[in-house]
Each structure stands twice: as structure tokens, then as C-alpha cells.
Length: 186
Image (cartoon, rainbow, N blue to C red):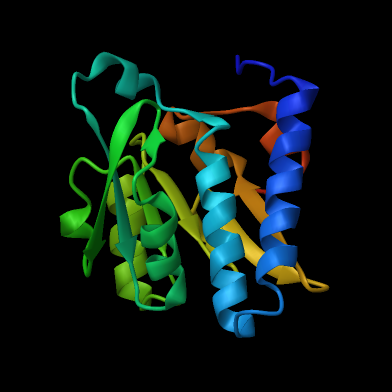
């Protein structure tokens, strides 16, 4: 069962996300703003997810891999620079194929992948404690755990609870409460 998070933490999280949006809104092109906001969501997701296997590892690195090429990958790289996740130094690696996901705790898919690439990713990550995050329509239904999307000028996210259950990851109920819940297409 996931730990409960104090209301003060929730309010702080909401304030930070809103502040980033307001601060950057007039200073960056729309695509950069959106990428920065999505990167902020990704960083906040790490506070609401537990990797049970991570507690058993002595590794001091939290590895994030980014697959695809657009502004989101660069925004994630900038945002995670110098911060820690789960008391571990963050290492970000840009990859081109599922074979390179080795030892990652999180996979971020930026933009669209070919059908074969997506299938390779889903095959590799199925049943593993790898938080998969994307930003492409329909990817959650296909098996990605968290998919971010834009709705009425807001960034929203959906969570595939079928894939989540198979992964062994634990997501705090607060994150689930604000998500659109989907199940994998069969």
C-alpha cells in the first residue's frame, strides 16, 4: 500500500507546477513551455512512485532513459540536472532502441515511435519495474504506464492500471485520483 502524502506536500506540488507555468508562459515558445511543464510532471511523478527493487539495490544511480527526439528530452535533462531521485544521483541517457534500456528505472518516450519500436519497448519493459512515460495519443492503451496529453490547454495524464500491476511498481493513490484510468487493449 502506498504511503499517504500530507496536504501541505500536495499544495506545494500544485503551487510549483502552477508557478512554473506562469513564470515561463511569456518567455518561451509554446512547444518549449509544454516540454518544460511535462518535464515538471515527470519529476513530480517520481515522488509518487515506489520501486520496490530499488530498495534492495546498492546502486547509487537512478537511471532515466529517453527514447525519441524532441524538446521533452532536453527539458528532462535540464530539470533533473543536479537533483536526486530516491536519494540517488540521476543519470540520463538518450537511446534509440529497446536493447539500450538496461538497468533503467524510468523510460521516457518523446514523440511517436514506429510500430515495431513501440512493440519492442513494450516487450522489454513488460513485468519489469520500469516506469514508462510517453506523450503520444493512445500509448497508454497500448501498454505505457503513464501517458501525458493536452486537453483544453492543460497537461493531463492517463495511467494504464493493467501495465502498472504487471510492473510491480507502486503508485500513490493521489496520483491515481487525478489520472484518467485506462486498461491495455487486448
